[in-house]
Length: 239
Length: 239
Image 1 (cartoon, rainbow over the protein chains, first blue to last red):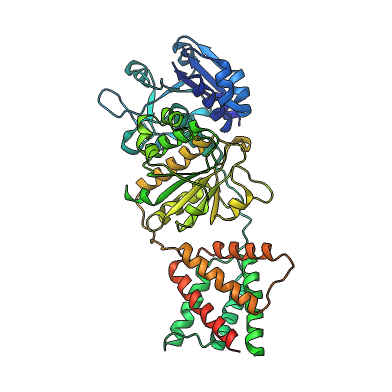
Image 2: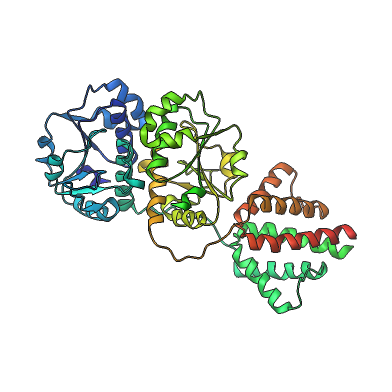
């Protein structure tokens, strides 16, 4: 995923080393390569290593620690700030989902930094004002997200928009022929056991047809069903 | 957000109390009300309280701790398993983003449980088989997500989809009770007609259970099915 080499995840003054580790793992989970930390408080590599797990080990080993935010913002073409607050002086232009296609578009040709603020206070107004855009992740009652959760969600959306992943579905649905066979056999069972609960037989038959269609039978399931119906009919007739 | 009262977030055998706290906060962040924990290892409320923060305090105080997964899966209408593994025996039918509109649709009329496995091993194959559907969050190189990150992403998607207006019809699914009745009656029919195609009866019974789950029976359809099964059994016995 070459596009991800243009992305810089920037944690501004993070308080807890555990969170730095969690963020390193989240970066690895979604193919982000560059984790930058600005003025961490008491950064402890050994603590971060635990929460990064083996998955985030490589990201953590290559972490870039800087003391001034300008060292990264001056190096990239576009800076995005994240914030939980939707109030007053703070301008929020986009929700994550609105802006993520633009982020992916930008990443194709530009270096992009996404800034995440400190756990307690977030980004300052001054920092937000220096960003080219600010985004927010809508939450219930505007409660603030855990730092690494916010990062994981942002990266999840970017990854989703880059990959547009499609899991192949190996589910083979029942063929019209199989469904017709089931219908015919079910009707035979119904007749053998006199299970027609009202007088309008045509309507009832339509109900049964609809019933079979609604089951969304797979081909495999229809074979189980057919086998059982066959045996049932045989037994009903034998008696 | 009344719809969220139908959602049960279930952590199965979580190892770390920190993670339970993180999950409580994520629930609060996206309006989920019910957090259930099955057999936690050394659950320490004081540790969980710290990572839950004030935001997740209420969820944590109302956490339901149970010792058997059946206590929750028998109480809901639809069970969704989450898994990182895409391999071999493990069936994964949907990526999160594909299935989330269905989850929201189901929640309008049904109680839905979403299961998250233990940090190291995830859900067992047996647990996954007992689910009505399984979903996965696509990641880079299929690396596994931190437990609370996976939960936050799932809840973020649900929350996002609830906010959208929807027009689809609301479907009332068969209850666990109805499905169990169907299972029992189907077994009776199978025994009456000696339809057990191979020697491993336990495996065969599991097949039948899976078969019923895969049908995604609506409540209305299950009533038609039950009526037919009842008549069939009566007739088979009479002879």
